Amino acid sequence: MAGVSRRAVLGGALLGAAGVATGVAGAPLVRGWLGLDRLPVSGGYAAAADHLEAVANPAVSVHYYAQTAEPVVAFTFDDGPAPHWTPMVLDELDKAQVPATFFMVGRNLSEHAELVRGRLARHDVGSHSWQHDDLATKDLAQIGDDLDRTQSAIRQYTGRTATLFRPPYGHLGGSTLLAADQRGYDIVLWSMEMHENTYRNDPAGQARYIVESARPGSIILAHDAGGDQRLVTIRGLAAMFDGLRRRGFRLVTVSELLSTAAAKPSTSGQMPVRAVGPSR
Image (cartoon, rainbow, N blue to C red):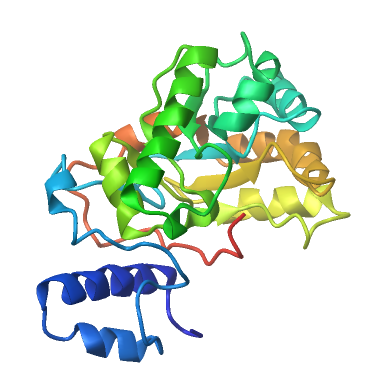
């Protein structure tokens, strides 16, 4: 699907699902344009149009970044908590007095809650599913159970109630949207990410990329779980924080970032969404 944007693919998937369910003219053309003979895109249960009784809010929000003129950016860390990496990330955040947003995997939190106990005061906590399954391959009931189990763990081990949700791999099926809508979640994706394989032996280069590429409202994807490549990011965090502050940026949580968005955003001067590599 060269030349097809991430947003166009998502839009095509949802339009196609709606066309199949309601007979909207043109849905077969969308499927043909994408080169598919059936929906949903890349697997998954895209039943957004088949379960309208499940809609609880008129418009679930999906955020790639915040449209704002204020010089604010948000660091986000996915997949933890995990031994080794999560404490190192928290240490760097504490040293620089930087707030961040942790999208936690429920199973990891239940197994490693001691890693974050008493250390989240300045940070946001969001849901990242129970065990990092691709929710776009599941139906509404399965996704609902997954998100509720994750929310229960977040409440039990952090005392928080998550209002932010990031789907694993950034995959959004229709049922994922409905399940998030039912629970009043804002869905948070990202506009920038760490390129740890590119900068595997160059933490300073990784830091320069983030500092030079950030724009007002950027949501930056990083991880506090995974393989040794995570060290490239962790070793560069201090330089990233310092460099962004030197550029005049304020580092905030996703919740604070979204609150800065204009009530009536204009398309003029809109920050471009930067291309990202494969989601993790």
